[in-house]
Image (cartoon, rainbow, N blue to C red; front, side, top):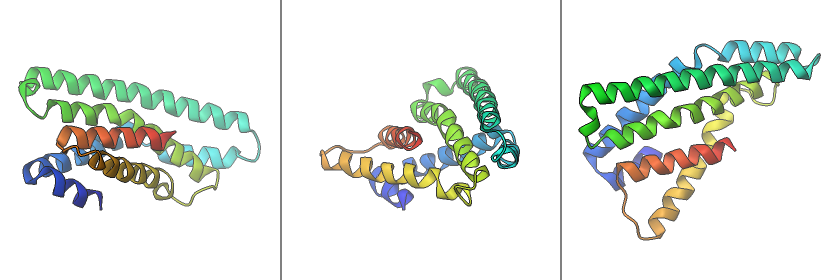
Length: 168
């Protein structure tokens, strides 16, 4: 549904770039999670009844590892942009928005995994994406009602804001 809204507003070429950037962010998310989903779910569910303090320790370690990996990926992306000549491209800002949304998406996924481990959700589809998508749609229509026009940067900025609001 969101892809239909985006494609109707920003055109064919920008929609293609948007889809490539979103798919790239999903690939980077898999790299950034570094296989944390199963250990988080398993360990939190195993010690949920015993010691709540260890749940916090597992989550803190997961968030710390995800933060370090996010920083490494962001720095690597910026270095790639500089040395490849991509920094002169019109797609530099959208690419940076996707890079900087990576930690937010990662933290949201870790939270989803902890909810699964605690038995509060059946899968991660039930927690994170619905909030972010709902906020995106609200922000999208609010921005359009103000009489503004869309481009790739505004769409990705709205997506980033929706992810931040969805994380809170």
